[in-house]
Image (cartoon, rainbow, N blue to C red; front, side, top):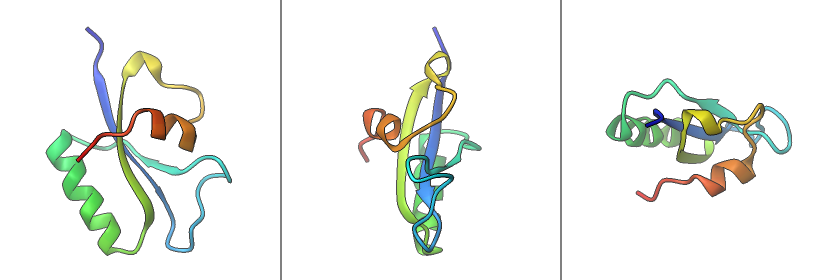
Length: 76
């Protein structure tokens, strides 16, 4: 069984990501509860488009795009 990676995709306060199709990614997440706490804190800081997503470690593409994030969203 592969390890599940939980991560957060987000944009800066001015709405920018790593590229037009790539958000910034925070994958320093312990578990789902930690992800939800971090998401709330990031939104309070004014970061935009904050989304929690999860995927199997073997599924990670070279570049994580918004399309990949949408396909792996975690429903809160």
